[in-house]
Length: 431
Ligand SMILES: [Zn+2]
Ligand SMILES: [Zn+2]
Ligand SMILES: [Zn+2]
Ligand SMILES: [Zn+2]
Ligand SMILES: [Zn+2]
Ligand SMILES: [Zn+2]
Image (cartoon, rainbow, N blue to C red; front, side, top):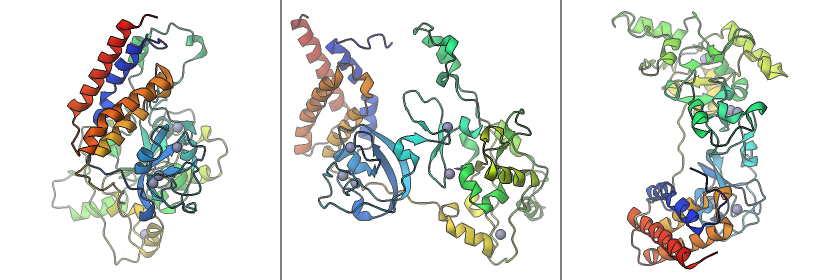
């Protein structure tokens, strides 16, 4: 497949570009949104944030700025970050903002964690979309991203670690390694939980530690460092369940309790029973579960642990659907919930306004799609890449000027014409 890498054959670029129509299609699907306004004037919002890798400053920009101001800069999408204000038009980024004319002061309250160094997870690895085989999970609290394997949901996929003795094997063995790249199912699959909170964040939230290991709040543990990881299961019946039993005595016996957490996670097709909310706004007594002693010890150990490779858990928790309605509402729990509003109220994420007159947006989006091409695979080098992008802009400009909507066929036509031109020029050109 990729044997033509490094060739200077001009057709190679056209072929490669034509294969990128998925990206262009993706861009066209984003068409209804308007990307002509920086979100800076809107203040601090939960919004999709981008990191520009070409600009030296480790600062975040809004999606409109990522398209309009840093068009030909390589970027990575960091997905939503709460309480974030665009730093493109501020003093903290030297590259000028083309959407917001006034130079603003730096946003001091933006939180710039390791994601803005292009590092993710507790393993602090960079993210490479081309080689990353694992799903990454975003922490509800700190909004960092975690590898499933770093949460002990599965082994690290083979593809990422090639033992030294295998490193010099023939590079055409792709088929064999593809087969081994099939990931085993995760201990807790994406369908088994609604939200994830990383161990570091759970350590700072005593309320979450109380719920850890109860139904609807899964935690992965092991009995000893030499034992395999498993979903923690306790015979302990928490108060939620007790209440359910008493409330549902008229219901068919065992209907809700037939499924243990293990049964749920070991078979993704089993519909998780919906836990009924415990709404006791006038109770003064705390109805949060009493921490299980094993789990309690895990968090005590984690807080003082220097070598995490001996830990019996990462402390990560996986909250099942409806978790926001299940917290205890006693004054002391409420106080803790108020400190972390996202635990009890789903947050809104800003979306750019709808734009019915979006021909120009496609020009922008088309460029965005093209700017996502991995640089190392821009086969004819940066010049050909830029020339092709200029062609596309030229091609799309009349659409924008006439306010015509560009459809997929138009974009395809561009790439077809491009390959034809390249083919023609190759016939004349003899190197
Ligand atoms: Zn912006
Ligand atoms: Zn930039
Ligand atoms: Zn900008
Ligand atoms: Zn990791
Ligand atoms: Zn976290
Ligand atoms: Zn309480």
